[in-house]
Length: 415
Image 1 (cartoon, rainbow, N blue to C red):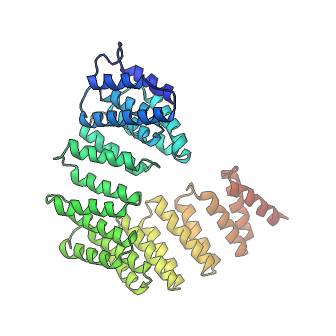
Image 2 (image 1 turned 60 degrees about the vertical axis):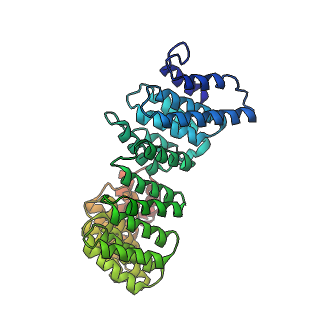
Image 3 (image 1 turned 90 degrees about the horizontal axis):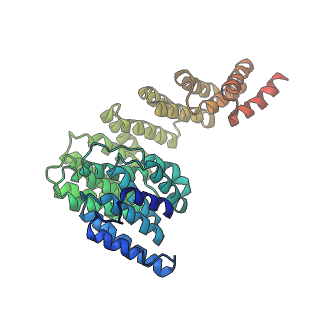
């Protein structure tokens, strides 16, 4: 890893070493050469150098030597064992210098850094490098970087990403993106379990930024933390009521209804939850959040043991969102499971599964759906249709695990 970063550094530096750089970077480079034995003292020294170069980069966001400073920061952090800090510095290089010719080396560095952070997220980490910020201002590049890192939510990066938020606000105190990024920082806190910091960020937007269009959203998001994370339902209910009173015509109204429904469902007040879900469905129309309201309503109906109504509600949700494959398929698969497990009605199960294959014959879950449909036909005594369905699965998905299961059942049917 260190060798790769040294190659990257060499690619952006001129001889003699750092001759054209800011004198401070020359100084840090000279200090780094004084150690390198991998000892505890060396790691502590490298960590100190990393902090200094990080501060320099934050103070000089437009400097010509910023790329070099970020690569130095990554190198020193790796020496210190601060791999998450190094990773964030490498992302900054990619996002701030998108036309650089060293993307392959950066990818290798990111991949190796992830080995010690979370191997399971390595693929996700590499995907984040695909974002292209060429042609953007540095302010826009930093904003996109923050959005990308929050979306990626890579393990161990909470503190360095939080520092990037602070650096942005210091560098651009009058940015038009302040409200949006403050909400995003709240999301970052919430994702990482710092719920009180999330509340503070959301409240800042509502109370300190008078011209923001996100007042209703920030108030609703504050309520979400109290309802979903802090389980302070009384405070959450008061905040949701405030949104409905102060911003009755905002896009947040339907979302508030849905979240009130979830809160009441969590409190096991199913009658109240049902009322809120119905209001949410009416207000949200075909917005993405409406799907959650439909499936939430179906969940409450199941808890009330009204299984047929729950089944019908899931079918309604599927039809409403038929153009969205994942939503359509998920709703119908839930309906099929409900028909099997609660209604004990293989005919209704088959009907839901048939709809999936008719609308999306190549859905990601098609092998499982085909197997379930074949088995359901068996339960209904429709062996010819079961055989045909199993054969379709075996032919179209010969290497899938469900194909081998289908072959076993097919062999039994053909005896």
